Length: 173
Image (tube, rainbow, N blue to C red; front, side, top):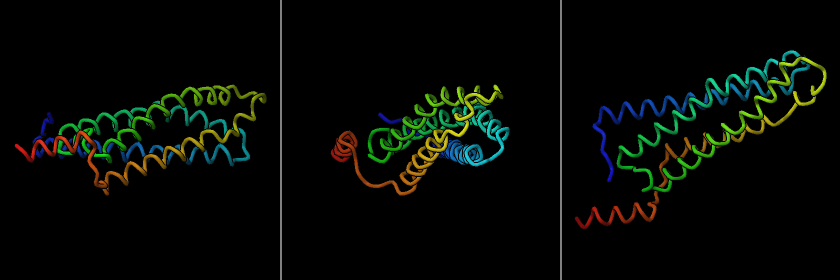
């Protein structure tokens, strides 16, 4: 049974969800810039600083915005006619958001290791500072977030089996 939000609450929840999602995408773009600089700069000190910055960005901006986007998206779907499991586009967007958030949280361990190496400022393990791993992860994250955005805008048709049953019940009532 869906709880329907009042129009004002629904709009406020939607604004909060969009703000968190756009913020997450913007932070991912910032991370993209940092990872590109880390890979391409000839200056080792700059590369080291980029890894330390990426680690800080992950925990202070990326993870909170990812979790906020997930939570506000679930609240938004549960409080509107879209529902959480009625339409394939909502289920797909939820799966993308959960996957991206889980991978992000798991990847923070790798970032912490890279940042520790970078902060050590010793010549050993300097090869790790040219790792393409952050760039690969951020490009995939950006593609996932853009995919979720496309689903939100175009809302492709298609009811899940649950959505179809709920629709039939509503029509027969």
